[in-house]
Image 1: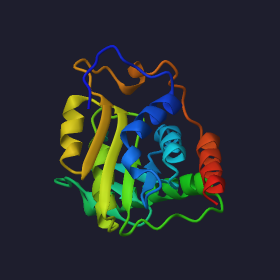
Image 2: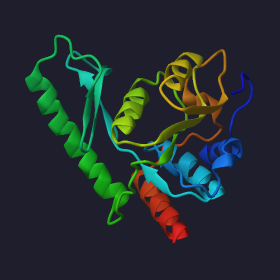
Image 3: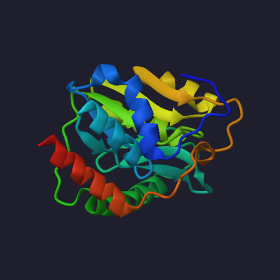
Image 4: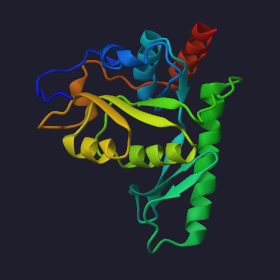
Amino acid sequence: MKKDDTERFYDRNEAGLALAQKLEHYKDSEAIVIGVPRGGVPVAFAVAMELRLPLEIILVKKLGHPNNKEYAIGAVSLNDRLLINDENVSASYIESETRALRERLMEMERKFCRSRKPLALANKTVILVDDGIATGTTLLATIRLLRKSMVQRIVLAVPVASETALKKLAAAVDECVCLLTPDYFTGVGAFYDDFAQTTDEEVAELLELAQRNAV
């Protein structure tokens, strides 16, 4: 973990290659690299290719408060749900919002995974990769959902994060690798020269390419 207000990455691929150097001890292991769509997938792809590990994605959506959708009261995956704080929120809202979020997740799965079958995560070490962390609230819920899927060990690996978010997330995982924790954090994109939006097509293509390389 390094504090530096001046260092930055050219793009997500370069960030992934830099992360892979810090994760060298997992090379050719039984670990699985998991990218957080969309922006975390190019970073995760670079990590997976360098370490010769399989690549997977995790599909999770934030469950927002009815009065402020940006305020997370939980998270929803394709087959699970985690409530962080549902105080003063009706059960009917939670159920209807869960159904709506799952529909969006199923559409994402169709776009990203196509005919590819998901990898089994139970009893595995998973390396969870994103392109950066601002608040970390949704990612914390993602980590808790991963725990419920009976993974053996969770390694969080990110190029850059705010110090507050990283402290919160590091306590929830078994190992944490972060390259930059700047004192002045304005947003993830500020630490990349090229922070173009990752498209659905790019995510699908990287997953297919990783699968072909694993054969």
